[in-house]
Image (cartoon, rainbow, N blue to C red):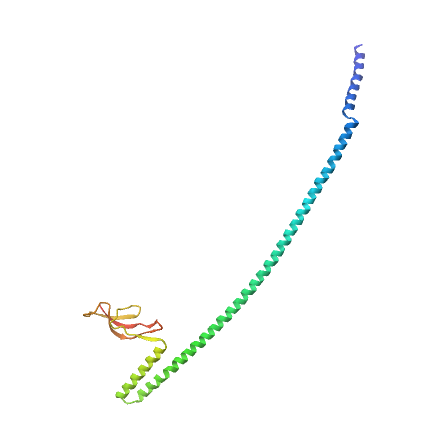
Length: 214
């Protein structure tokens, strides 16, 4: 009797489970689920389209930047080429200027030498005449005239003699070859000149050879 009652209870339990399943999954539930699925699909498509649009915009922007960089690079290359051309032309012009200046300097130096020697010729003529002249006052006068002529020539070229007798000793202009104890003379004073010094336009050519007081 107990087994038959248990057998009767099992189908009833199965019927209740089936009813619960049928109530859980109903046509209305399936319809709502399908509606949700239908709504999800367009949203996903929109996101893909938006991502694709952003990618296309980004690609277009990159192409524009690349194009701009290429244009700037071409412009810089052109400017560099122009600068190189200017630099090379300046080098060539400087080389020509330097060569022309050296040639002019050589020509000027030769001209100055020729003019100086030309100015010395009259003094040389007078010295030759003095050698041929007999000894006497006229001979001495001829030598004096030749010396004065030479000094005038040197003066015209910017030469000036250094005769520092009675002046303070200057090691820049004077060369002391002897010292002496002199009375009534200030120490470091030039007392005698053994050889004249010369300057040309303020530049020392030869220092004066002198005697200096202690």
